[in-house]
Length: 374
Image (spheres, rainbow, N blue to C red):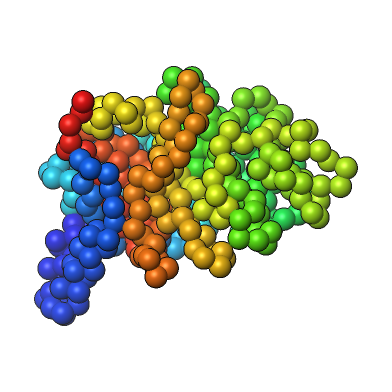
């Protein structure tokens, strides 16, 4: 539904509630800070627990969720920067976080399987029953939610998190990066030692795969760092549970393992920032300084004594390698540590604007550049 339609319906039922909702959205937007030349607005709302995003044909945006169990589609049919149509594609699924789109089919990653909705853009109002693509993933909920993307090789990529905060998983499938063909065949484990990755993208110039990984808890406020990793070779091991951040042996599981045995992160985020979705900027709307740079949604800490994160960061690359990190959008965490929202995923639209999902508020923001391109 369009936000205006929702507000009108609420106004007819409860005028005070409608005004409160509209004011709430505007108050949150006012609290958020973007660089000069950028504007921030609400693209879509009424999407409880909105998480991963995927772009379909004709600007359709598919939205996965976590515990809410639904998958949505939203459309901005009049191109005014606000979604005016909303559809429920599926409900009562098992944490359908991951969504990917290819050839008019929507792929959805639940905890234990990947399903597919065929000819989806032709049937948004009356979605077909899904086809099971692959159903051999573990069913444990802990770190079970999955990110899902098609790679440059037209294969589906996802990850299987560790079923614990810190442990030595009994089965090779846990704490892994995997890929498979779109029809579910050709399943392979590409890398291990990955605790919980909920975001990855391919660098435009090299097609190299970069992914976020959230570090273990209960080593204190400032350890270990969360990670940005680069996968290059099948069989790589990124350290979990033996080594964190490339140089921190785990006090429980390192034993005779040495950190040099494992692939170190190419960038270290501060501990407990919870970096999730990420996108290299390929568009032409933003000024040239953002071209091929990496936007990262930092979901925010949940058990740090002083919260941090709750922002979108920009990781600057030079000669193909990350060299610095800076704040792109913040304000979801107030000065008195009140959490207004939690960014989850980032999606580039055909016009070069960015969409950012927020699973706390159930909204999608739109970031547009109107400044000098230089």
